[in-house]
Image 1 (tube, rainbow, N blue to C red):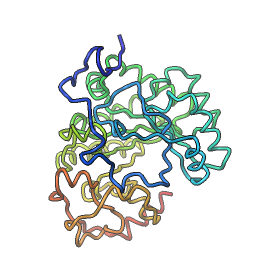
Image 2: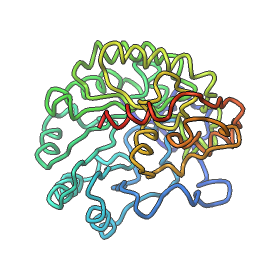
Image 3: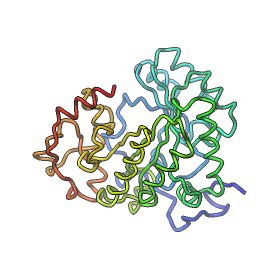
Image 4: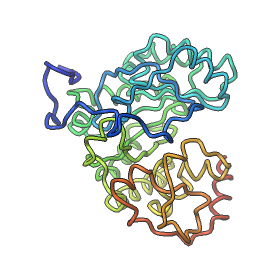
Length: 331
């Protein structure tokens, strides 16, 4: 039987020891740097059909009104991202995707766990509406670990099938995997790369995000590993993806923690183009003094430094001009 772990009643999952009730934050509010008014993310709902242990949306109370959806779409012509909760549970998703494309938005992105895409009709409906990118949360390639992280039972093989459906129906160029790197999965990242190569040929790329101290993680800070612990596993994973020609990007990792893969940082890509959206989630520290890449690296996440400090940071001596040329060459 496949079942989501719910509040009260039902069967508890493999993480029954973890507290489920999380306050908004310690002060009763959210950081003033986190959600700018121009945030091009549209939150269609607050509920979900899985329950990831690292979910950053839980108790953040993000929901976008219809008026604000229209305003954001009309104000952001580059990219609009549809999020939740799980946005595929909103009946209005196709309508808003269509509205975005009709009003000149270049790229529409859906952040999803892909549960509904066992049904290819749902994929075709969204592609017809104009959806450009399916960004699929896929936190592990091992069934028991997938169940533990998502607090579900028996969904893993169905999720694999859903991703394959997306690649076959929408085309691999529209599909990317999103993996939140955390305490439970960072050591399996090299084999995760092998799995992606073998099971999802033709996929657009893989996005690696460091876990945020938001939502559930405010009360589960053990889920945030150190950069030092993660580094060897991530470097091997990225090397494997590069060798087999699968594109990837990193988000939230300072450049000194990604040696040899600096050009794969979304933050560096943006800063090379003088873009600063979401950069305020990160901040340079005194340890960054003397780093040659300061113009292309925003530093570590602020919430990471509050938890682990900045002692792991290592000022780079690499050429910023050479890195900038590579970043601008790559579009």
